[in-house]
Image (cartoon, rainbow, N blue to C red):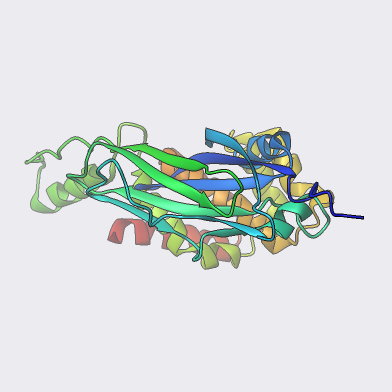
Length: 285
C-alpha cells in the first residue's frame, strides 16, 4: 500500500506576538497544530502581549523543522534597527510542535527575537522574515515603530544648597510622568538581579497573592502559575512570575516600587536587605 502523504500535508498554525522589554521589543513566533491552542496560551501566559499575524502552513515532505530566515534581502530600509534572535539557528522542530500539550511539553515551541531601534533609526521597521522548510512560500513581517524619546531634562534645578541640587537632579533624571521610578532603569535592575531575587527566600504564594492584590497579575494568571497540572517546579514557576513582574516594570515604573514594598512586607532580613540592594543599584545606574 502506497503512503498517502497525509502526515506531510498536515496543516499547522503559527502566531506572532509582541511584548515590550525595557528599551527594546520582544518578537515571538510560536507554532502548534491548532491556532486556538496558541491564542489560549498567549492569553493565559502573556496577557499583556500584542498579537500580530497568524499563518497556516505545512512542513515540506522529509523536512522536520522550519526556520526563520532573518538574513534575507530586505525591500524596505532598516537603518538603525537591531534584530537579534535569542537562539541560532532560529528553528522550530516538527516533533516539538506535535508534542505541545503533552506532560513534558507544557509550552509551545517558540522563536524569540529582540528588536531595538537606536536614536536616528528609520521611523518604521517593516522587516521580512521568510519561513524556510514549509511547503508553500510564507513570509512574516516584523512591524515596529521607533519609540518617542523622553522629554529633555531641565538644565537647572533650584535648591538651597549644592548637595540638595545634586540630589534633585539625580531624582529628576529617574522620574517619569507615570511614577517615581523610570521603567527602563528599574527593568535593567530586575534583569541584572534575577538570581538575587530568586534566592532571597520570599514565599512564592505570598508573592503571588500580593501581586494579585496590586493587579500586577489577574486571577487567571494566578491559577496558571500555581496549578499543579503544569507540572512545573517551584523554580520554573518563580522564573515565570519574575518574567511577568519584569515585563510589567518595563511598561510601568510604579510596579518596581510595589515590588520593593512586597519584599519589605515579607519582613525577613534577606528580603529587606534585597530591597535596599535593588534601590542602591537603581541609584547607581
